[in-house]
Length: 89
Image 1: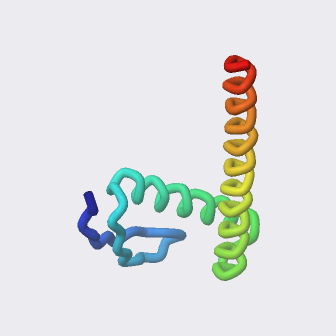
Image 2 (image 1 turned 90 degrees about the vertical axis):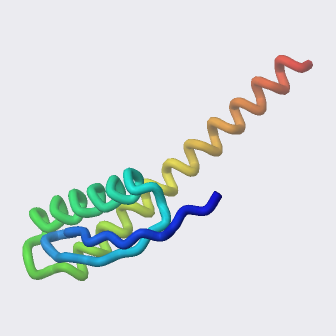
């Protein structure tokens, strides 16, 4: 079942953006909230007027988090496979 795309107006780092998404609203708004929080945290550390740098740092942090989670999921899957193999032996 495909979802219909919906238009949202959101605030990220004090700027208003109109975005379109077909994701569940709760997931989309959680993502917006996390990006806004991270960019505000970085802005406090880096300083105002550094929006491009803040965006790059936020993108790198989010990508790092995703890579770490993917690695953790792969390790968990390998352990589960090993346990299944052991129980079937």
